[in-house]
Length: 338
Ligand code: NAI
Image (cartoon, rainbow, N blue to C red):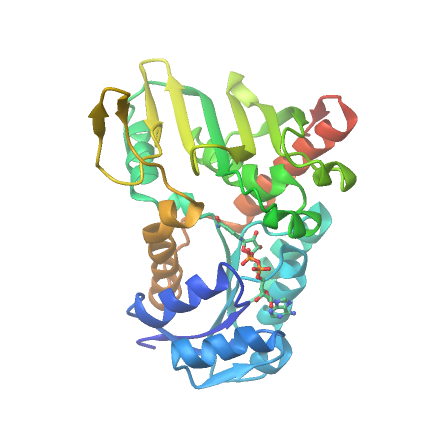
């Protein structure tokens, strides 16, 4: 095989970005089909992508024997069943995070992948960002001594229209939707220690509609790992200045920070009001190149038969910890992770 023939499921907010990347930016990928149950999304794909086949059902797309792999950018609640269906149909699978909202489903999907002759990977895009990779290499080379503390936040620009609220009931809550990225980073940057305990709390600062569905718009959590390692997480939907994702890792001989100033570009304006820069509006502007790198990594790993940088076990573990954070938020008690 010289190229990987791909079918893409989901053409929503993020799926359309994947479609453009797979069609134009990943040299060894051939986007040969896409599917969505929504006619306006299929029309977008016909007009924008120029790909030969657009299906109205996932099952019909899977029935095409010429497709080697599927990319799932569908609602999270569908991920585990769609992963299993794809593997059973003889396709490799890339799936957007998180793996599932339910731990048993996560484990079943991972076991299914283990037993299959085809391969599955869940995307955690920050691992493919150049700055995070540099930080990882610096830490792995001993640059900060023994790393023992991570602070990591995912904080979205406030949206006065509250448009995100319609996604909230199916997102699993702010920790599973947003902090799961930070949890995966913390495990990766601390050397994959076992998590032992989670504590969380949160508040509704701006969007009362979230209270009705048991969600929050700002949450904080602490996770203890074995060997005295720790992480602190902040997830927010209410930032006034922009999308502000950043991470600090502290070790016995130093500290690495990624993205402390979430600047949109390298322009800095100084005047009588002070010194300032503009800020990124959303996650996609921040991580656009990493989404391409991640797709290339998946395609290369399948074609060259090399390992994925992250495993299904990593995806299960990130979800397990984020679910424990949600449980602690709901109960007000620490949650033990055995
Ligand atoms: P969305 O709701 O905008 O898009 C979902 C898409 O799936 C729509 O095109 C919908 O028509 C399609 N769909 C629904 N049922 C389907 C089925 N049975 N078969 C095929 N397609 C189906 O959602 P969004 O925001 O694009 O999120 C999709 C996934 O991407 C979620 O799992 C989310 O957690 C993840 N995501 C990851 C981000 C990251 O930073 N890595 C950021 C945003 C989303």
